[in-house]
Image (cartoon, rainbow, N blue to C red):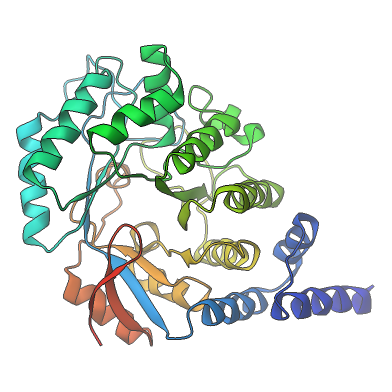
Length: 364
């Protein structure tokens, strides 16, 4: 039995090194049976093949959570509030403009905006907001609204997802973040986020955006109730969509954070588990150029380690973040020079990028 196991791992190892695509069954076997060092070695090999210059990027952006009022009721979320709660809020446009001004002072290029599913905020709220942003800050890339928010607007306005996206794109929306993906398996979603988008709806929003010429990212929140098969199912779905559209710029996994959620009874996801997920993602997603490691959920001690497990991007300076911090986790907001220093210490060449992974400044 042992010799067969070693042979199977060796065969898959060679297949990956030779640049052959793994099947979902092969990826699941590798994910469940290979040791972390083997996965990391393979993932780093692929990262090096895709990025031989050893450049690691980061983006200067701001995550503005424009409202915390949400009707979704996700079990993993500590950020959501009811409209009647004392700390419920909706930011007014001037507050958002001020945050963008501060972002520009940091040398930022990207505005990431996501919020709750707030039934009081109709499509015209976003149209007027995006137009106002583009009038005042024409060079800021508006990378905003998750598939969940787009799908919710479609239901509120009783128009198609494509119509919502066309209207928002015309108003100034440039690209979509990958939020709301969690785990793209309805077996998981029905338990942790039954009132949000289905797997098919999340994929539809991104496919539609890609067809309209918009780029997006794909994400994953792991480390809660999912099984290895769900991880591979998720990766397979986004790999298939990337084959079809080529519209994803990057894949970004992070771990569920406990603290004020309905899933706090679960054991903590380990850093080793996160690195396994990161590695198998780089190995399986052969049509993704960029994989991002999460310093927000993994801290700056573990996040940069992910650069040796397949990632070529350290994410954002995170001038602001409210969703993860609502669990009580302390999130660092490093300035660009600090991000560059951390990347150098990890053994790579740091560079600041924009939303589309174009390099705007180098630090080497």
